[in-house]
Length: 402
Image 1 (cartoon, rainbow, N blue to C red):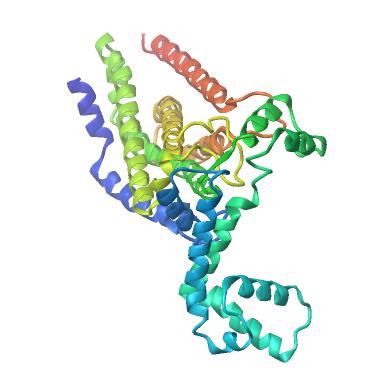
Image 2: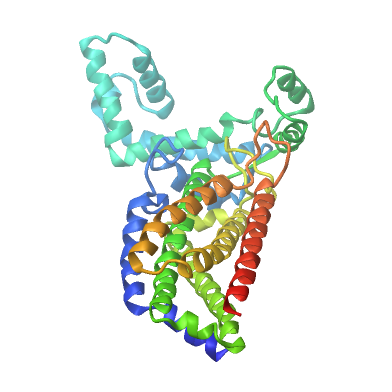
């Protein structure tokens, strides 16, 4: 244990760690979706969509049932009253009889559909647009109502589908795909409720998990490659190879590298989880892993928090397994720093690409899918490849050393 701790200390160079901390901050600010949240474009129409849905989760709980129509109407009326209270103070709108949300929205849609507007209509359109987009109070309420109506928009298609309606939709080709896909979708759309996880929340997590996985890989390369190259340049590896005890240190160094990988990965994931909580998205953790108009997932009965933890664990497992490639393929074969950098960049890029291909939109159900949870099989295949590579390198090193 003392030797493992000493090897870990050698890998965790303070200077490199400080540089990686600065790099991680810039990386988060540049590439992560959670840093940019809340903003429109994350499978959302506006920056208010996800925060409003989070408010609904706090008020209604993690799901909305079709039978809870009264709950929906009460919330809708509450928002309408708040909106009407503000626009009634506008004399221009009052003159035109626009005194509540229903009239406001109807007029706004009418003007939006017209190709040519009169002078008065242009003036009115400008006033209405100001309330919709530029007045902070009315803009939020108006768009919150739109987000609320979004829940009902997919009722009868994505959830709450009767047996008769399902047969009609299936006959129209709405659920075309493999038998595996059809079985999974049928089970989902016939539920009499919907989880209140917004599709934008899935988008943020799925984009960021691959991105954070890439950051972990970069950190591991930056820590382990200098450690291995330094050992090689100081002729420590040939000295260790002269004795049986020395050769055992090879395994200890690999274990130390794996422990460092685990520590770095846990730290990065913990930081991401804290940011997620500070942004107010942790409220979705208790919801089921599917939602309004979102994609279907094989693990949709898991809570979203469990889905997020599983996502993190699989990314971390992939990164730790990659230590074998970093440690044996680059660290022990490249004789200088320039060569190590030249080889590390494409290898790291290739491994990040592979990670993205496997883990993006984890456990997604597609209409051409014939194997559920294929990501787990892909990970198992990756672990087998890494293990075989490890055994080959170990035997080769043993023959050379002896």
